Image (cartoon, rainbow over all chains, first blue to last red; front, side, top):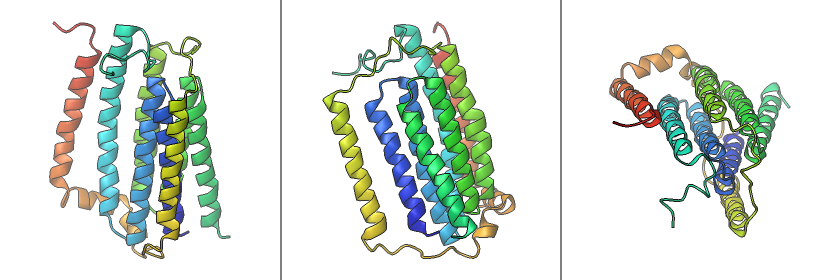
Length: 99
Length: 170
Protein backbone atom coordinates (compact mmCIF):
# COMPACT_ATOMS: atom_id res chain seq x y z
CA UNK A 1 0.00 0.00 0.00
CA UNK A 2 1.09 3.53 -0.65
CA UNK A 3 1.25 6.29 1.89
CA UNK A 4 -1.47 8.21 0.06
CA UNK A 5 -4.06 5.52 0.81
CA UNK A 6 -3.49 5.78 4.54
CA UNK A 7 -3.57 9.59 4.44
CA UNK A 8 -6.82 9.65 2.47
CA UNK A 9 -8.41 7.15 4.88
CA UNK A 10 -7.28 9.38 7.72
CA UNK A 11 -8.78 12.45 5.99
CA UNK A 12 -12.12 10.67 5.47
CA UNK A 13 -12.45 9.65 9.13
CA UNK A 14 -11.37 13.13 10.22
CA UNK A 15 -14.08 14.77 8.13
CA UNK A 16 -16.70 12.33 9.46
CA UNK A 17 -15.67 13.48 12.94
CA UNK A 18 -15.98 17.14 11.89
CA UNK A 19 -19.49 16.50 10.54
CA UNK A 20 -20.37 14.79 13.82
CA UNK A 21 -19.23 17.80 15.83
CA UNK A 22 -21.07 20.26 13.57
CA UNK A 23 -24.33 18.39 13.06
CA UNK A 24 -25.06 16.53 16.29
CA UNK A 25 -26.53 18.14 19.39
CA UNK A 26 -25.92 15.35 21.90
CA UNK A 27 -22.89 16.37 23.98
CA UNK A 28 -21.68 12.77 24.40
CA UNK A 29 -21.79 12.06 20.66
CA UNK A 30 -20.01 15.35 19.93
CA UNK A 31 -17.33 14.29 22.40
CA UNK A 32 -16.99 10.86 20.75
CA UNK A 33 -16.62 12.60 17.36
CA UNK A 34 -13.70 14.56 18.82
CA UNK A 35 -12.10 11.24 19.85
CA UNK A 36 -12.62 10.04 16.27
CA UNK A 37 -10.78 13.09 14.92
CA UNK A 38 -7.90 12.53 17.36
CA UNK A 39 -7.64 8.94 16.17
CA UNK A 40 -7.59 9.86 12.50
CA UNK A 41 -4.69 12.24 13.19
CA UNK A 42 -2.95 9.36 15.00
CA UNK A 43 -3.41 7.14 11.93
CA UNK A 44 -1.62 9.58 9.65
CA UNK A 45 1.16 10.01 12.21
CA UNK A 46 1.70 6.25 12.42
CA UNK A 47 1.61 5.97 8.62
CA UNK A 48 4.29 8.64 8.23
CA UNK A 49 6.34 7.03 10.99
CA UNK A 50 6.20 3.64 9.29
CA UNK A 51 6.97 4.96 5.82
CA UNK A 52 9.89 7.10 7.00
CA UNK A 53 11.22 4.49 9.43
CA UNK A 54 11.23 7.12 12.16
CA UNK A 55 10.14 6.27 15.70
CA UNK A 56 9.25 9.86 16.61
CA UNK A 57 5.83 9.73 14.94
CA UNK A 58 4.88 6.79 17.13
CA UNK A 59 6.15 8.59 20.23
CA UNK A 60 3.89 11.51 19.34
CA UNK A 61 0.95 9.09 19.03
CA UNK A 62 1.82 7.68 22.45
CA UNK A 63 1.71 11.14 24.01
CA UNK A 64 -1.44 12.08 22.07
CA UNK A 65 -3.14 9.00 23.55
CA UNK A 66 -2.12 10.07 27.06
CA UNK A 67 -3.52 13.55 26.47
CA UNK A 68 -6.70 12.00 25.02
CA UNK A 69 -7.13 9.90 28.17
CA UNK A 70 -6.78 12.98 30.37
CA UNK A 71 -9.11 14.93 28.10
CA UNK A 72 -11.75 12.18 28.19
CA UNK A 73 -11.70 12.10 32.00
CA UNK A 74 -12.04 15.87 32.39
CA UNK A 75 -14.54 16.26 29.54
CA UNK A 76 -16.84 13.55 30.88
CA UNK A 77 -16.66 15.13 34.33
CA UNK A 78 -17.74 18.44 32.74
CA UNK A 79 -20.64 16.66 30.99
CA UNK A 80 -21.72 15.14 34.33
CA UNK A 81 -21.59 18.57 35.99
CA UNK A 82 -23.60 20.09 33.11
CA UNK A 83 -26.20 17.35 33.35
CA UNK A 84 -26.48 17.88 37.08
CA UNK A 85 -27.20 21.58 36.58
CA UNK A 86 -29.57 21.48 33.60
CA UNK A 87 -30.83 17.87 33.43
CA UNK A 88 -29.93 17.67 29.75
CA UNK A 89 -27.01 17.00 27.41
CA UNK A 90 -28.60 18.86 24.51
CA UNK A 91 -26.09 21.47 23.38
CA UNK A 92 -28.83 23.81 22.17
CA UNK A 93 -30.17 24.14 25.69
CA UNK A 94 -26.75 24.61 27.24
CA UNK A 95 -26.29 28.16 26.00
CA UNK A 96 -25.14 30.34 28.87
CA UNK A 97 -21.82 31.08 27.16
CA UNK A 98 -23.33 31.43 23.68
CA UNK A 99 -24.90 34.40 22.02
CA UNK B 1 -3.86 -8.03 -4.66
CA UNK B 2 -1.62 -9.20 -1.89
CA UNK B 3 -2.75 -9.83 1.67
CA UNK B 4 -1.70 -6.39 2.84
CA UNK B 5 -3.88 -4.60 0.29
CA UNK B 6 -6.88 -6.78 1.11
CA UNK B 7 -6.38 -6.12 4.82
CA UNK B 8 -6.10 -2.38 4.23
CA UNK B 9 -9.34 -2.18 2.26
CA UNK B 10 -11.17 -4.48 4.68
CA UNK B 11 -10.10 -2.58 7.80
CA UNK B 12 -10.50 0.80 6.09
CA UNK B 13 -14.07 -0.07 5.08
CA UNK B 14 -14.85 -1.15 8.67
CA UNK B 15 -13.28 2.02 10.00
CA UNK B 16 -15.18 4.40 7.70
CA UNK B 17 -18.44 2.48 8.01
CA UNK B 18 -18.36 2.34 11.80
CA UNK B 19 -17.45 6.04 11.95
CA UNK B 20 -20.48 6.88 9.80
CA UNK B 21 -22.72 4.68 11.94
CA UNK B 22 -21.32 6.29 15.09
CA UNK B 23 -22.12 9.79 13.88
CA UNK B 24 -25.65 8.94 12.73
CA UNK B 25 -26.93 6.77 15.60
CA UNK B 26 -29.55 8.25 17.89
CA UNK B 27 -28.79 6.07 20.91
CA UNK B 28 -25.42 7.04 22.49
CA UNK B 29 -24.75 3.48 23.76
CA UNK B 30 -24.92 2.10 20.21
CA UNK B 31 -22.78 5.01 18.98
CA UNK B 32 -20.16 4.18 21.63
CA UNK B 33 -20.14 0.52 20.56
CA UNK B 34 -19.59 1.55 16.93
CA UNK B 35 -16.73 3.79 18.05
CA UNK B 36 -15.16 0.79 19.81
CA UNK B 37 -15.43 -1.17 16.53
CA UNK B 38 -13.73 1.75 14.79
CA UNK B 39 -10.89 1.67 17.33
CA UNK B 40 -10.39 -2.06 16.78
CA UNK B 41 -10.20 -1.48 13.01
CA UNK B 42 -7.65 1.29 13.61
CA UNK B 43 -5.63 -1.09 15.78
CA UNK B 44 -5.58 -3.55 12.89
CA UNK B 45 -4.44 -0.78 10.53
CA UNK B 46 -1.59 0.04 12.94
CA UNK B 47 -0.57 -3.63 12.76
CA UNK B 48 -0.44 -3.46 8.95
CA UNK B 49 1.87 -0.46 9.40
CA UNK B 50 4.18 -2.56 11.66
CA UNK B 51 3.42 -0.44 14.72
CA UNK B 52 2.78 -3.31 17.15
CA UNK B 53 3.16 -1.33 20.35
CA UNK B 54 0.81 1.45 19.25
CA UNK B 55 -1.71 -1.12 18.02
CA UNK B 56 -1.91 -2.83 21.40
CA UNK B 57 -1.97 0.47 23.28
CA UNK B 58 -4.82 1.53 20.99
CA UNK B 59 -6.88 -1.51 21.95
CA UNK B 60 -5.93 -1.50 25.65
CA UNK B 61 -6.19 2.22 26.36
CA UNK B 62 -8.76 3.45 23.83
CA UNK B 63 -11.11 0.53 23.29
CA UNK B 64 -10.52 -0.81 26.78
CA UNK B 65 -10.24 2.14 29.14
CA UNK B 66 -11.51 5.34 27.53
CA UNK B 67 -14.59 3.82 25.92
CA UNK B 68 -15.53 2.03 29.15
CA UNK B 69 -15.42 5.46 30.79
CA UNK B 70 -17.74 6.78 28.07
CA UNK B 71 -20.16 3.89 28.58
CA UNK B 72 -20.10 4.41 32.35
CA UNK B 73 -21.02 8.07 31.92
CA UNK B 74 -23.78 7.32 29.37
CA UNK B 75 -25.32 4.79 31.73
CA UNK B 76 -24.81 7.05 34.75
CA UNK B 77 -26.71 9.86 33.04
CA UNK B 78 -29.44 7.41 31.99
CA UNK B 79 -29.49 8.64 28.39
CA UNK B 80 -30.89 5.39 27.02
CA UNK B 81 -34.08 6.93 25.67
CA UNK B 82 -33.38 9.87 23.48
CA UNK B 83 -36.92 10.93 22.78
CA UNK B 84 -36.68 14.31 24.47
CA UNK B 85 -33.50 15.15 22.54
CA UNK B 86 -34.72 15.82 19.03
CA UNK B 87 -32.13 16.44 16.35
CA UNK B 88 -33.55 18.89 13.86
CA UNK B 89 -32.03 19.40 10.44
CA UNK B 90 -31.38 23.10 10.06
CA UNK B 91 -29.69 25.12 7.32
CA UNK B 92 -26.67 25.54 9.65
CA UNK B 93 -26.06 21.80 9.74
CA UNK B 94 -26.38 21.47 5.97
CA UNK B 95 -23.91 24.31 5.42
CA UNK B 96 -21.57 22.75 7.99
CA UNK B 97 -21.71 19.34 6.32
CA UNK B 98 -21.16 20.93 2.89
CA UNK B 99 -18.12 22.86 4.10
CA UNK B 100 -16.72 19.70 5.71
CA UNK B 101 -17.14 17.89 2.41
CA UNK B 102 -15.23 20.74 0.75
CA UNK B 103 -12.41 20.28 3.25
CA UNK B 104 -12.37 16.55 2.44
CA UNK B 105 -12.09 17.30 -1.29
CA UNK B 106 -9.22 19.71 -0.63
CA UNK B 107 -7.42 17.15 1.51
CA UNK B 108 -7.84 14.41 -1.10
CA UNK B 109 -6.57 16.76 -3.80
CA UNK B 110 -3.52 17.83 -1.78
CA UNK B 111 -2.66 14.25 -0.77
CA UNK B 112 -3.40 12.43 -3.99
CA UNK B 113 -3.32 14.68 -7.02
CA UNK B 114 -1.16 17.70 -6.35
CA UNK B 115 2.10 15.88 -7.02
CA UNK B 116 3.35 16.27 -3.47
CA UNK B 117 6.53 14.28 -2.89
CA UNK B 118 5.68 11.63 -0.35
CA UNK B 119 7.94 8.71 0.56
CA UNK B 120 7.05 6.11 -2.09
CA UNK B 121 7.61 2.83 -0.29
CA UNK B 122 7.92 1.57 3.22
CA UNK B 123 11.22 1.98 4.96
CA UNK B 124 12.85 -1.38 5.63
CA UNK B 125 13.50 -0.42 9.25
CA UNK B 126 9.75 0.02 9.93
CA UNK B 127 9.46 -3.54 11.27
CA UNK B 128 11.99 -2.97 14.04
CA UNK B 129 10.93 0.62 14.73
CA UNK B 130 7.50 -0.29 16.06
CA UNK B 131 8.51 -2.95 18.58
CA UNK B 132 8.06 -2.50 22.32
CA UNK B 133 11.81 -2.77 22.79
CA UNK B 134 12.64 0.07 20.43
CA UNK B 135 9.84 2.34 21.63
CA UNK B 136 10.72 1.73 25.29
CA UNK B 137 14.36 2.54 24.59
CA UNK B 138 13.40 5.84 22.96
CA UNK B 139 10.83 6.60 25.66
CA UNK B 140 13.28 6.26 28.53
CA UNK B 141 16.23 8.00 26.85
CA UNK B 142 15.29 10.73 24.36
CA UNK B 143 11.74 11.32 25.58
CA UNK B 144 12.34 10.86 29.31
CA UNK B 145 11.36 14.41 30.25
CA UNK B 146 8.06 14.48 28.30
CA UNK B 147 7.30 11.04 29.75
CA UNK B 148 7.68 12.39 33.29
CA UNK B 149 5.64 15.50 32.47
CA UNK B 150 2.87 13.17 31.26
CA UNK B 151 2.52 11.81 34.81
CA UNK B 152 1.85 15.35 36.09
CA UNK B 153 -0.74 15.83 33.33
CA UNK B 154 -2.52 12.63 34.32
CA UNK B 155 -2.45 13.63 38.01
CA UNK B 156 -3.97 17.02 37.15
CA UNK B 157 -6.64 15.30 35.04
CA UNK B 158 -7.57 12.94 37.90
CA UNK B 159 -7.83 15.81 40.38
CA UNK B 160 -9.79 17.91 37.88
CA UNK B 161 -12.23 15.10 37.11
CA UNK B 162 -12.88 14.46 40.81
CA UNK B 163 -13.38 18.16 41.55
CA UNK B 164 -15.67 18.71 38.57
CA UNK B 165 -17.83 15.66 39.14
CA UNK B 166 -18.20 16.20 42.90
CA UNK B 167 -21.66 17.03 44.18
CA UNK B 168 -21.01 20.37 45.86
CA UNK B 169 -17.95 22.57 46.14
CA UNK B 170 -17.54 23.86 49.67
